[in-house]
Length: 99
Image 1 (cartoon, rainbow, N blue to C red):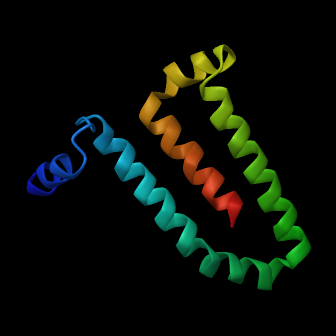
Image 2: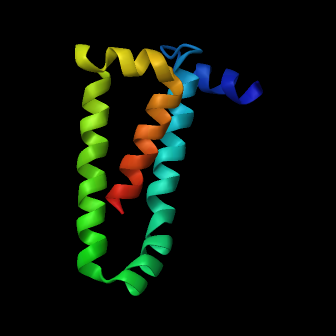
């Protein structure tokens, strides 16, 4: 709790609900920086071209899912899964596709 109070002193416009977003952004960034190690093993095993096409497909589908969360067409999916789990899943899927 002390760290959160310190953050509130540094940036007083943030609310307690922003703590989840800050944590999620940190996890997303960490995954992006650690995935190249894992991606290298897949590239060595399956080949550069196959891995590049798979990553491009995952990246594109991930961004489409991110956009779907803000559209009326995706409201049912967002309500069925819940906002938090949906956002976490989509961001991690997009992060995997980015690497």
